[in-house]
Image (cartoon, rainbow, N blue to C red; front, side):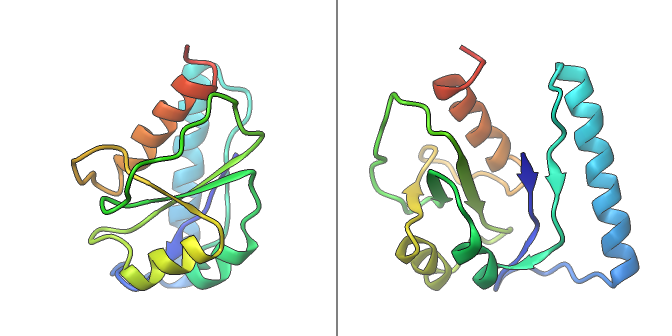
Amino acid sequence: TRITALLSKRVEVKHNAERTAKRLRHLHKIAKITCEQCGRNRIPANSAIEQLEDWIPATRAERRFVLHHRAGSNKDSDQAPASVALLIGPEGGLTKTEISLAEDAGFEPLQLGPRVLRTETAPLAALAIMQSRWGDMA
């Protein structure tokens, strides 16, 4: 229901306020078109860009995951959670300190498989897996 761009240690893109607002409008337009195409009636909201250190403790969801390729085995559950939050790092991944910060705040480490996915691909893969397991793609 919400997409939030985060600033973390390895984020290299720097925008001024005007460019950031334009980028967020563009992302909202893409989300709207995508929802129309697949018949989804709720467009995900785009939040303002936030600092990772602020977002982690403020994130409320029944299950919270931090995706990274060094995660161990995943806890599995057949019961669909009421809400899920996914933390996915930038190109180059989250630092060990950022991963620890998330895990210390209750985020479960999650690995989608043995391959390292691009930042653009990881959210789509994770959402598709969760929709297949708990959602309406079964």
